[in-house]
Amino acid sequence: MNKSKLVRTLHILNEAEMKELLHFIQSSYFSRNSNIVKLYNILKTHYPDFKSRSLTNEKVFKKLFPARAYAHQQLLNLTSEFNRLLEKYLIIRQLEKEKMLEQKLL
Image 1: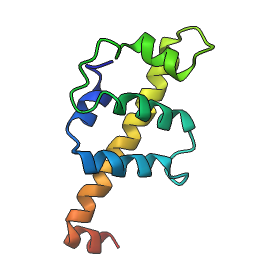
Image 2 (image 1 turned 180 degrees about the horizontal axis):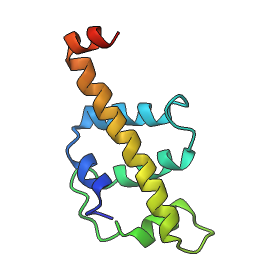
Image 3 (image 1 turned 180 degrees about the vertical axis):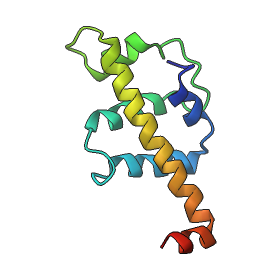
Image 4 (image 1 turned 90 degrees about the vertical axis):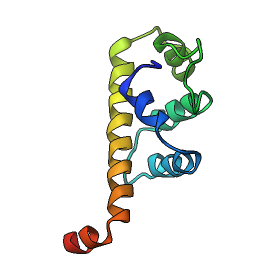
């Protein structure tokens, strides 16, 4: 998992952006999947380097769903959904920096 697109993108965020991202993914307007927040909390413990040996797909899945057998597709779906939210967060952050574009879109 430490080489996934999600982790590579999380790696570029600074501490303040990581905290802001948590608020973003907790918002019911953007996400209704509570497992994304659980995944965030698991990954956050490995921030900023994400190089831990315990950051494997199987171990992350077990932390997310302790009573279930590993289901690769379910984890892929969750990480893809999280990645889409992360990209949306980054777009909104960039838009906030570009006031002229923000006003044009308004």
